[in-house]
Length: 393
Ligand SMILES: *Cc1c(COP(=O)(O)O)cnc(C)c1O
Picture 1: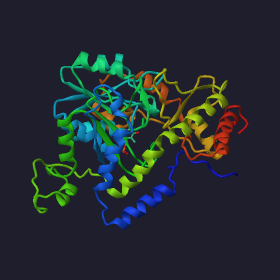
Picture 2 (picture 1 turned 90 degrees about the vertical axis):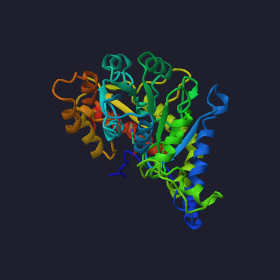
Picture 3 (picture 1 turned 180 degrees about the vertical axis):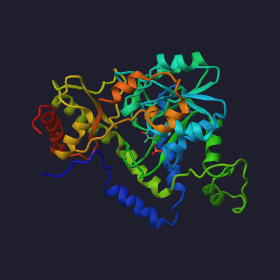
């Protein structure tokens, strides 16, 4: 058999390796000059000066998107008794952070075209206890943020965007990360669109939110460790103002992320070319191909998520097995949260049905899309999907 094509691989070049080695040699491994530079460069890459009202935007580097989502909710004061709207079509991290704070995630069904949170269904789930909404830009296709902002204003809700799939993209002419949401959270996990192995970034234009997240990121200490050792105040002195967390990003990881950031547009363009190839290679098969963005909006193509249609000659599980037998790794995004025992039990037996997610889950399959794929690999994936669905593999 030819070599197995994995579902995902990071795209790490010599520049990332050299950056990490040089950090290791520098003597400063934990949060320091590289993390601070990454925060500045991450904001600069969104060109905030080109967008009205975006001048205030700041970034807080963290050791995962999960940490960032938790910090943002904490800084917004979400706590026991509060409800937060979360799509059921996501990774458990989006909802678990709500539980960390003793609040309740209310799972909302998704739109069948995009698999993004359906704001009409979200409106039905609002109660007097609803405090915030956490949309996920599934696969890298942004939720229309104009409609999202209108929804939040109409119901008096805070907005935290889970942008773990969606760096770097424009949505309605403005980068995801800028806009009116309270906070936007990106992931640098190993398989995401840019990586530092583990890591993440929270972006916000609210200076109070930024200050609280900076403090809570590192033990609730009012000045971070780098400033402690470089400012003119006595280096041994610090003040604890809250029981904070250990969520800071190391300089080892940040130095890798700084290189990935400079490559992030080129890597997105490569994934976009792969998606274009799949769209034409898979035309006419019993498949629903991913939705395309509206003009002014981009797709980050973190995932290329297909749905088998009713006339497919086999079920999803069988399809994935045959793809694997033919040397192509596939995956499923996502097992809806309400199918997992913990979330099912938390919702209880009387919770509203989530029929779109149920129906789409049975058909969902993601095929490989990562920027280091070769043209030959991309072609082989397309040919293998066709061969499996035409009963030739
Ligand atoms: C990967 C992912 C996260 C968590 O990211 P980490 O950086 O691993 O914490 C959160 N939400 C979604 C939708 C994800 O896919």
